[in-house]
Amino acid sequence: MSATESSIDIARVAAQAASGKLANDIVAIDVSDRLAITDVFLIASASNERQVNAIVDGIEEELAKKNLKPVRREGRSEGRWVLLDYANVVVHVQHEEDRVFYALERLWKDCPAVDLQIEDSAAAAPAAPAAPDAE
Image (cartoon, rainbow, N blue to C red; front, side):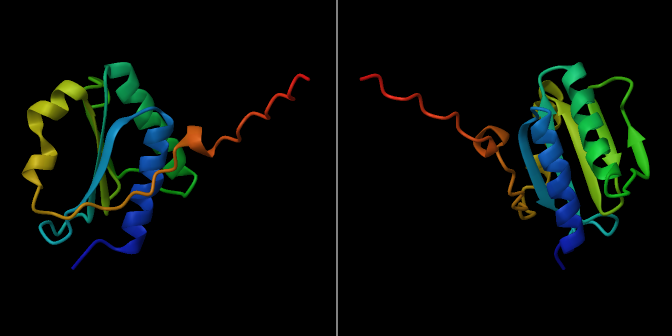
């Protein structure tokens, strides 16, 4: 069994929100065949504790717009590894050092990746109009 489309949609919204807050190395893993309690792990990282918390805030704000609240939240006060449990999607926002140390992607390497389809906000911005040629 693979992750449900609604779980993948939630992961994509969370990934886009994380990207908007400048998260690094955003990946999603379909863990539904290995875990009965969730479908997708979304993993993102940041270089400092403040950025970790900003990413978490951005994710929670975007998912709240879809009437989704985490059923559990852990690690917020430390800002090193924050876990947001949305039941079918578990979001891990980690400090870069912790991400390297715990290597969640390595632990779940046998599970397929989820295509997040993250839009680059810089690429989505309209180009500046060209200056008229001076004659």
